[in-house]
Length: 227
Image (cartoon, rainbow, N blue to C red; front, side, top):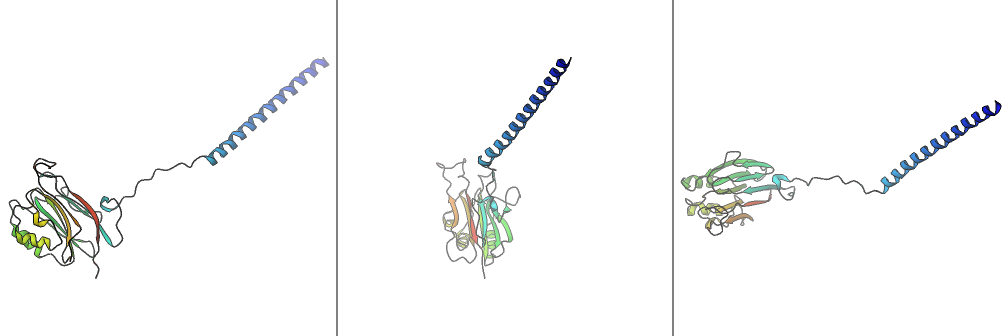
């Protein structure tokens, strides 16, 4: 009887010993995994967070200096899609705004503040060029002048109108023809030719659209006018 009791106690002790050893190994393995995870995390490459490219005013490819106005201007597409003018992230004229028309579209901006002062469009296919001439003569000194064509910009243009636009800094207005595409940014009182001008001729052999050349798009930074 005594021997049976001793064997029972021995069996209990052995079971307890195995349990203690098992729990010790489990705890050791858990700590090893935790420490190993910390070590691997320490040397693992840092997770890169994708960053969006910076957005510039009017969707320009780069930002403008502080004392400049950002602009983007697009000519019309054939006789279907109207031109678009943007200044300092504000859309001044576009087909969506329903304030563009066939011919020459013009936006006037205060050269000091960037404030839009006037917009208009002039039909050069069936309109009266004298309306355009009157508008051009009334532009105030220091104004920034943005122009974009839509459909036909030249049939009714005469020398007087062309000369007034040339005085704003245009180099191409003298050769602007039927259904040409043209975008231009100049200014009243400018002393030199503007660097902001693009012109493409209506040419049946190179036209992108039937009867019209491809769309022109131009962007840049206009210096603010100082006293």
